[in-house]
Image 1 (cartoon, helix red, strand yellow):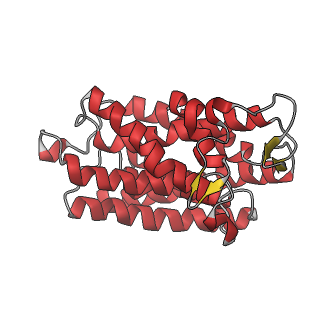
Image 2: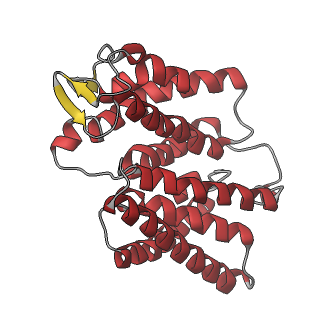
Length: 272
């Protein structure tokens, strides 16, 4: 993902618009990006306040993490070579156009669509791509009764903790400055995640008769993912409401995919 981003990915996302897509030649191999000057496109300052190369590096984080989010859904069903080909094609065909449309000045941005830190560009693309990929690769060859039971619950908790910590960088950092929007994004992320964590725990407790650490972790990610597109735009009370809405909708989606026997190993579609 990093190599694709360096060679042509950033240009496809933030280059000059060519129809519905970014021009792959605008910043090919990150040419024209300064370590001192803001990002310029067609003589116009695109992202003020930070060096263009720093902006490209930061955006590269999203391009790298998004395929990783999607990957969790089809665990144990891809060989390495097809997986590499799939990820490269997905970055170019799916991620780059959506990123350009929303963040790169494309048609959705011109329509007034706002996505603070990747709710559309990252989570929706990864979630629905995960669902589509499962239609192709099918189920894991294993015991139906145990397919939703993680083999290492402490690792699930550790991964959730790392994600939660990193999310402050995703959401807070998307303000591109240390100011009010960054503070709002960080605080709102914490509130939404905490509310979703608690409510998911309560629902599991009521339905299953006991609270579960895995459910707690899934609820946390649901809250974080749901607040992401609005994190820097809303008040803390709205983050609280979004956390509650995320719990109900995402829990319902996770149960729905079980009803339809979709083998999503990490509930990528339901949560994101």
